[in-house]
Length: 311
Image (cartoon, rainbow, N blue to C red; front, side, top):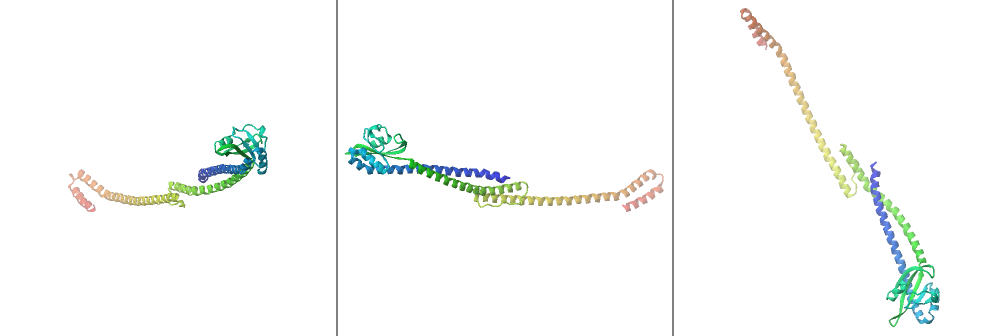
């Protein structure tokens, strides 16, 4: 049948467009939520850094002890780095055994006057961390860099949960989109199929049928055009057929007249045949015997007159 072929030509592109749109939306939403999540985490670390800055500066001689105390209270990793990259305080490690931090990207950004941010794996803690560094200035001179850090495990768990919700929501929306695409495809294909069937009937010479006019403006115009075309062609065919019938009737009447004429001529010829034959016989006899027998000539002349009368 034509219907499944037509709808399966329309439905897959509709579904593909819907799925592609949903995937793009889900991808964009996921990226946006990731960015928003990490921005919020960075803002939180920045706020924590500004809160602990006065305490760090007030107890600079006991800076490592202060870092460990504040780190336990806030659940943060706090590291104090001098401008040359030396670590002088850390809430989770021994500063004396820690490497020079002058090559850390967040530290470099902080020294340049901006807020340094970085996400990477921590060799000290053995987990992925978000680092945020801000410079501490005194008399317009950078005296230290406060770096706060937080494991992104919590953030990753939250994002994983959020991604699952987006996935399930996208799946439901995809099913709804597939159903909507099917309905739209049927709405488009059904009138096209009906018009195709009507056109096929027109091609076989059946101009009495009409196709249904759909609600869609473009297809409705096409259906009306097909119906009007069928009506015009059907009317012309009826006119031609009527003219042919009339012509055939005239030709038949002429044939009858021709037959009557022929019969009349035949009858007249038959009626004339006998007296003409008699006259011919008389003339032949007169030619043969009239010169030697005047009496017979007179008799033949009388018969001839009779024959003329009969004629």
